[in-house]
Image 1: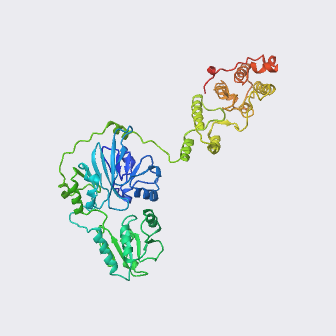
Image 2: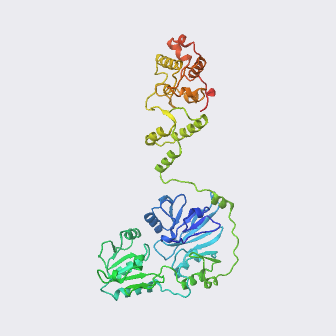
Length: 533
């Protein structure tokens, strides 16, 4: 299906145009009405760009396309609105909506800004009352008129909708024993259906989908979804195109009516084509252009403007449009990404940032681990509640290059632990090192309990730094292949262990055990001496 939309040159405005990759500079999007040829590319996934439309169209936009509420901005008709065209509020555009007399919710847009005055009609059926709108009566001259040229054929005339309605009534009245099938688009000509229901005092049978639209529009209660409840039935227009006389009269004598301005030759006498149109006729377009006298015309459908309409233009020289620098920067900037809910925000945050490693990392290079640790710590600080942590525990265990320690196990503080416990744990580790059995398991949950929030962590000097800076890390990471360490290496590892011990000489004095550990040099690590990770 072809799209009938336009990007307004030299502006961040787009009307009925939804292919954002083809209009990277557009920031404000406007929807004239909800016919499908004006919503090509607009889906429920639309985001990060506002959509301005009438209140009725906003209701249908939520109902039919499920566009998220945060992107829909309904504007009242005949009220001027100021919308920003840059980030600093320096440049603005005045937007006024005018009833387009086309289908429920259809409007024209009048734009006024640094680019001059632009009237975008969308699909419309001209009536003289449009020229009495205050914004058109008092506005300056129209610089550019984007015109609905659907019926722009000088050789073809169209009756008014009132005359076309009378013709349809006469067809139904002349066939009193026939049921009536009317072929319509999914939106439009609802006033015709209501008038026929009132005239012939019958229900109008519609589909469930159309009934949803009718309820949203709050139309009179003349519609039903019950089969056979009324004499008049509404079907999709395409079904009437291919219907046959046999199909229509299979169960009951039936006639079909196709209210359209399209040229269509009826294949049989029971199919009646009536020139009922929601688009302006050529003569109506002439009257409209003659009254507005715009500087230029841009056709919405195709690219051809009949010579009769071009001859009505005043042929004024169009001044060159200068785009303000603030608007230019606004058009170049990437629209800010926003999320529709806090839940979606949490999911994105979990997918983009790794969780903090809990345990000892063996295989990650120092620089890379430092970056991962900083990012993960930041991610944890942003967690909104405990539910996300429970959700991510399984994935973090699977993806992280670390040995996990159960963080739910309470680690006692220095004051809660006895000196005997501290010494016994130290002696076990020293004996393991002397026997050449220092491995990853000695540094796991049964060895040094790694917890970033524990009082035992020596600032940034933790077991990660100890193992990664070890000259013989490979021998430490494999228990089965470990060999006897030289006394020099044992002494080096002992000193490294002692530097990271969570106690000092002062902790032993109250217990009277200082002579026992005086063979070792224990010095607490100051913050300035800690090795960053």
